[in-house]
Length: 122
Image 1 (tube, rainbow, N blue to C red):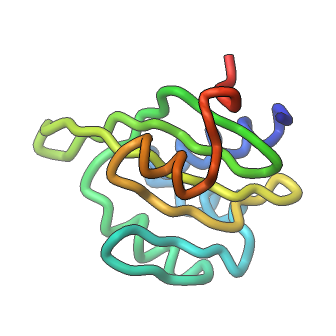
Image 2: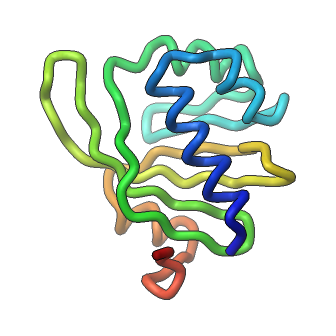
């Protein structure tokens, strides 16, 4: 585990939640891949569109890290105040997020990335 991978992902969350697209893009590779169960996109234009379409904030919870893969359990709060949970898997290379995939829950994110409780930070 490296501190820089976690720091990059936490800074990415901060920028996303603040609507700071310039910082979000600077923390992301030019060919970043973004996806969820509804589809995927690639590149800064796709990331910008995805970030603008979000209707809430993602508060990081437990974080799992192994070999450049970071899984973050998240509490999601919509603009209407509704809450839920999700988990997002990130790939970080040279302090840049190269891929982001949102899963419905932590178990799905861990299964998709083959991370385990042994990879939990903290």
